[in-house]
Image (cartoon, rainbow, N blue to C red; front, side):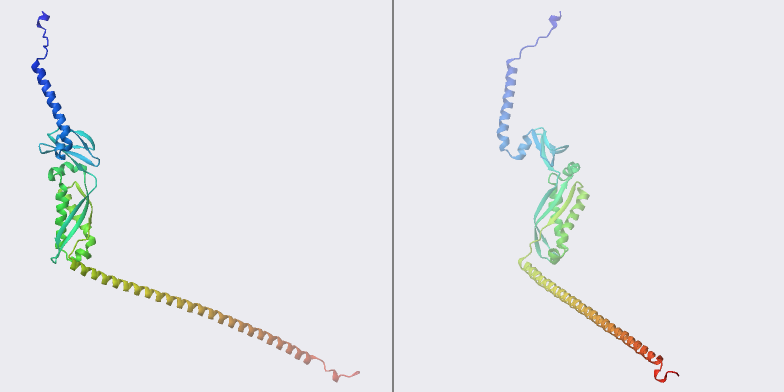
Length: 303
């Protein structure tokens, strides 16, 4: 009875074998076409078509499917994705330098100047990658660095004179730009950190630049004259000190010689006093001897 109900697999029909062969041929043809077209295709097409992709060091991988940003964030290395359906972009999360070039602006006095290059060193923190790209896209730095620098430079120029922008407060522009960028990034895009800003000297009209150069030359001449005067005063002061020192030395020598002569005179005087005292003592002794000597002329024998 069991043998009567046993199902025996029938061999594949010729039609099924033909379908499998057609599918295999199609896939093989597709693989060959991909190998031929992918190397010569544009990066965006390669990105869409590829299955295996590499995230370089210092970056993270972000993905879109059907135009929607996915929350998946991958670390550096090789990863797989669905071809055609998923797009991939590497996003740098280490320090990077954005160069903003050709920034025209007008000063408070109406003079047009141009900042040829401003460098902004910045970093996107890894934990804010999804939020930042969701709000501002892959080119978030265009909004918060390139466009923002243009705005802040124009604001700065419009509130300062050419003298201030070009000379007086030029050394403060770096910090002012850094603070201005960071304030808005902290408020609206907290994942972006502004490390530093380097502003090059702006280009100004040739006639005005020549006036500044002449002013700088005159200022340099004045500074040189002041330095020369200081050197002359220092030399005169040094000579005066040397003369005073020489005079003090001579005075001290004269004083020592005078004291020496006084000592010699005093010694001579004392020696003469001693000799006089000795002479007087000797004369007194002789006088006393004569006074007390007996008068022998008045004495006779037998008296």
